[in-house]
Length: 189
Image 1 (tube, rainbow, N blue to C red):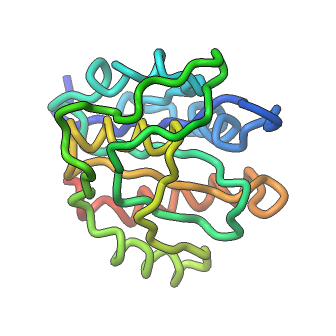
Image 2 (cartoon, rainbow, N blue to C red):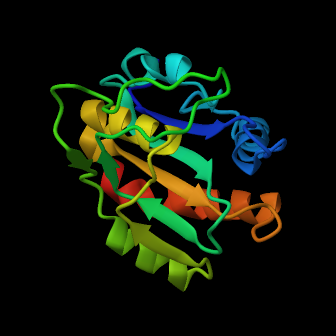
């Protein structure tokens, strides 16, 4: 049995007018490509009830890295999200549900990752990808799952917002992710 720690990669399923989510395609593609016990892959439904205990059930001391992926229809660049905010917006999920205004009633207003996303952004931009660091993951499930992950594994978690598939193809998104993983090795060993 290996003493290697696992890396968790997630994407979201379809929601609203987005009938095909590029992050779901990414996760399914990587699952075929990276057939290694080191990696755990999940496609999360855009559901507050499903995501409410997901982090607690899946992130453990054997997890070295958690990268959540989501799509941002408004973005033309890849956003490395470093801050989860303890807020929930007005939009209902795919089950037409929306919890209260806070993710955690007694939790801090925000949690920042301990990973050095500035350095990571510079490496990724040097590798030919257009990235920026962001402190605003929105107020929907992207922020929700980020906040939850950071509350459990602050120094091992972050979120990546990717542009729509018309801007960044799935093969290019896969290349980005593999380069991202390579560049994160020194931070998560």
